[in-house]
Length: 117
Image 1 (cartoon, rainbow, N blue to C red):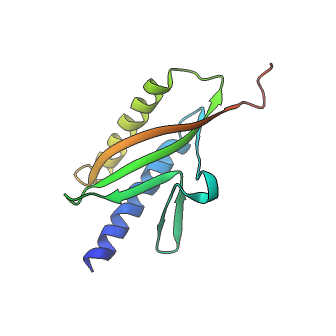
Image 2: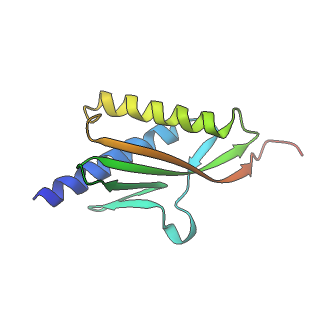
C-alpha cells in the first residue's frame, strides 16, 4: 500500500507541475525523444515532468520545457519563477512538505508562429 501512496503523490505533484507550466506564458512541456520525459501513474501520464521519490520520501521533479521565441526574460529567471509558482501551488494543495528538489531544463527554443524573421 505504501507504494501506491508514493505513486499517487508522484502523480499528483507531476500534475500540479503540469498545471503551473500550462499557466505560464512562453513555455510548454515536452515529453522529448520517444516520450522519455514523463511521469506515468495509474492510467495517467504527465508529459514533460519526471517525478521521483527521493530517499527521504519527498518527490523530486524534473521539468522539461520548450521556450517560445522571442523569450520574455532570461531562461534562468523563468526557471526560478516556475519553481516559486510550483512551491506556492504545492503549499496551497497542502503538499509543500512532500515536494523535494525541482530542476528545470529548457530542451528547445522554438519560434513563435506569429513572430517575424
